[in-house]
Amino acid sequence: MRKITYIIALILLFSCNKELYDLTKPKNFVASKGIFDNKIVLKWDAIAVAMNYQLFRYDFNAKELKLLVLTNNTQYEDTGIVSTEKSYYRLRMYNSENYFGTLSDSIYGYTKSYTGNSIPTNVIITKGTYSDKIILSWNKTLTGVGYEIYKLNQSSNEYTLLGSTNDLYYEDKTNTTGYTKIYYKIRAINADKEYSVFTNADYGYLSAKQFDFVSSFSTLAPNSDSYAQPRFLSIDLNDNLYVSENAGIEHIQKFNKNGSFIETFGTYNYPTSMLFLSDRIFVGIGFIIFEMDNNKQWLNTIRGQFGTVGQMAIDDENNIYIADYPNNRIHKIDLSGNLILRWDISGVGPWGVAYLNGKIYVSNGNIVNIFSKTGDYIKQWNFDTTIYNIRVKDEYLYMSCGTYVLKVNENRDFDIKIGQTELVAAIGLVFDSKNYLYVADRSQRIYVYKPR
Image (tube, rainbow, N blue to C red; front, side, top):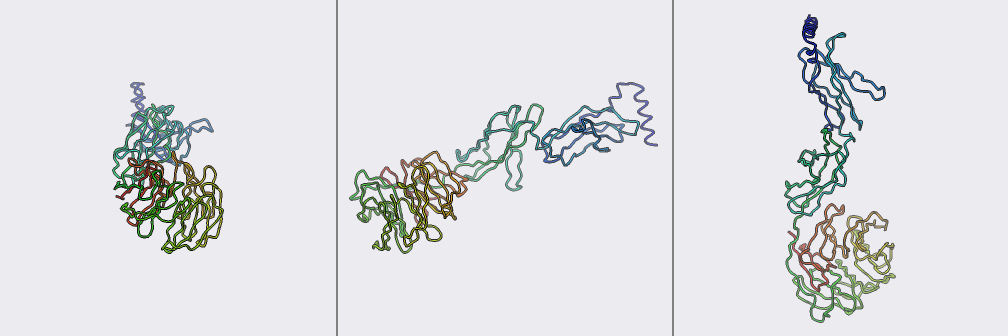
């Protein structure tokens, strides 16, 4: 009876005024654009005389509209869509086999995988450039008139809208903690309110001071030549510092941690680095290594076809790695001085070497090459400055870079610069038992930094 009443009402309505027939045409028929991963949500206004609605989707293979659903609701979720293209729809009122309304105009929707609106490219997010803001920038897209920036919520592990802009950059000033990775995604919007897919997630971070400058002291101690320039810096078990200087200086100078000169150590031709262990000391002298006890009494002389013994490092199996600059090699020996293996380094000769978590880090020029303990190449890091000595402290690598010391972790998530306002030409570096950082600078000074 209800259906007959609807039909009679429609006949009377349309017979009075043909223009009123458009009252059966759906209004505010919309489809979601780039909001959901695998569905498109369609909505429309209710039609007063409608009992049901037919929703059609265009089939590109059959090149015709096909009925998607018959529903009495004013919303429908077209699920399971993974296409990178638009999906087109039309809608009409439907009350019986012989009674239906006017078809809507064609509309379209798409999922997040839609590629029709070009994605922002060359996204750059500042990493430690500023202490109060992270700046995001990108290239203009062909169709983009605006851009949305999404930020990862650490609590929910979801990306939420941070802000939008018509510019090609955005400043995020909502963060307060330095060296904490903040992840972002960006998408473009075109004039038709279409969204591009999101850019790949990338991160930025604020800078923050981690070390405070404490003091500096001169290496021009008694018996030191005026042209001496510190190159290698070592520390013993009592936090005494040992400074090896440039060629022509035939001794190693010893200072206490406050910078007071104690003595000159040895009379050597071209002393280089020192390695202090619990029961012995290894001293690099030109192309040989002297092994001594803790009283600096000679135990052994190690010769291994070294060109020059550079920085030395020890791994978790008590094997020693030696950077050999003239020969472009890394030598690996045991505590008795027996050669285990050696491997060549391409490019300029290696200067620094360090061990961290099963990997060997070797500096040569502006590159740090990373190897396994068996000398197998893993990867490399490129820098915009020369890397000299490398030290490991608390799962971090510290690298002297001339005008600053660079702190990174083994994934190089951060580039933290220390001493930029004091250092002139930093070469050697070492930590004491209180985590104070000592840096040997070619300005003939040792700089001391206290961790925050």
